[in-house]
Length: 124
Image (cartoon, rainbow, N blue to C red):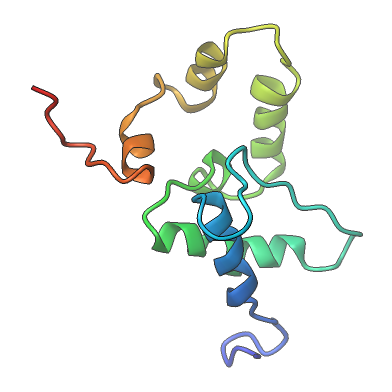
């Protein structure tokens, strides 16, 4: 379907919805470790991510990527991701790499929500 505001943009919400379900552990596939998109240049990967794939998990209450929430896919964000995470391998503890990337320690709340528990639940 072509969007009226962007006449040359092919919307793929069904594909994005299936991928969002898989990221949440629903359906026949499971992308619990994340998702990697690969295709030849100029085939619409960035447009698909921006217009379909990123909004689908957000609509389900999921936290989207650091890059998306900090200005989008820019050269600076890509370099930051490379410098602080991808190039580190197993040279640092993952908590340290996470803290360096996002500026705070990991929080259990989003995982609890993803697993169907309330982040506000009081265990006592």
